Image (cartoon, rainbow, N blue to C red; front, side):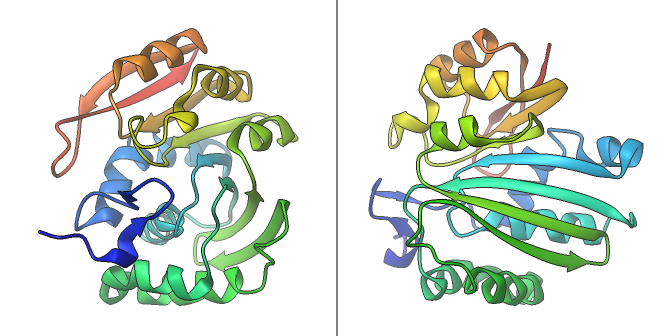
Length: 228
């Protein structure tokens, strides 16, 4: 099946996501893979970092996931980075396929995203209120390593996303993954869709215990791990 042009990131000649049900994929790989609910039940707050904001697919999936969790009074800090930010209109087109299931969340994100200036580098901040609590989004417009160095404090959880190692090797380079390890709290977790050997070795070198687990949809396996 041909991929619609609006789903392709022209900078990497690759789709923004690889499965039809990308919201459910996110829940399986990233949220269950990092044990989000267990972590949130302990403290009620969590600092999340993501490599590659794209169209906000993981953020949409996260809000849907937490809305259904039954948890309340949560405080989520969501740090992400995007080297090639897209327009609000492009974001709407990319997320259109999920509108029937999470249209209210798409609209809320689009309204907030439209309020920031994506032409300016460095941090942009928006805050959303949901039944589970609040999510403060710190979006860094620029390069991923710069974002990691600019973080004020280590993150509890990392969603290693972006395009695959063959299409976007920079987002998986050892220098960046080592810096991510240094900016991960003790006992913090990561999850990612790729099982590339070079990525796995770099994550081990960065201080993570790495485990290959069952994937989702067309992905037979994915990676997750915890900081030593």
